[in-house]
Amino acid sequence: MALKHTKVRTQPKKAQIILEFLFSMIIVFVMMFGLFMIFRWVGYEFGWRRVEHDQRMLNSVVEDYRALDQGPIEQIDPYFHKPAKMNAAWGL
Image (tube, rainbow, N blue to C red; front, side, top):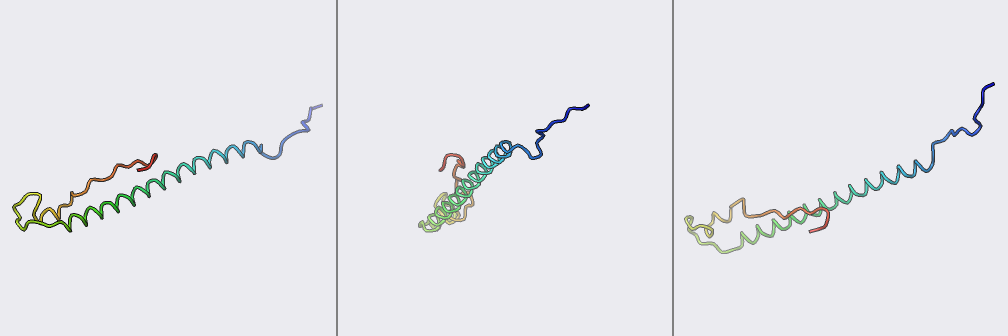
């Protein structure tokens, strides 16, 4: 005569489901925080680049193309801006 278990679970363990959900939500929240910080950095970077470009264009210039760092060639220099450091974890 074979023994029969009378307490066989037919549903998964509720505690395991809750823990899996909790850990997955923690990971999702950390990823969302990282995305928000990256979007914040990108907005800051584009805004500051625009301000620096406007300042460069509004400065008075010497109309001598041979003058280094003063002539009109300075206004069209594409390397006028140094990017901000990306600090996505602790803010700007």
